[in-house]
Length: 96
Image (cartoon, rainbow, N blue to C red):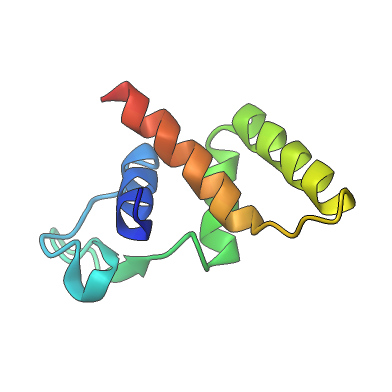
């Protein structure tokens, strides 16, 4: 999955209103209509957005964090945001 696909699926999992030009500049835009200001959704790099995603399914988030911690303790550096977003995106893709 590309970063754009992962991000779009995470936005869908959060039921965020995707903007009409969701792939503008290779980023997912949310809002921008019905009185909502446009904003970019970037949970792969934005810790607050990733945490909000994790709070939407605490059990899945806990499983991912545990796996990340195991990898970290084993000396393998992994990006927690990427692991969380990938798992949530895969879950959303399975729903479709």
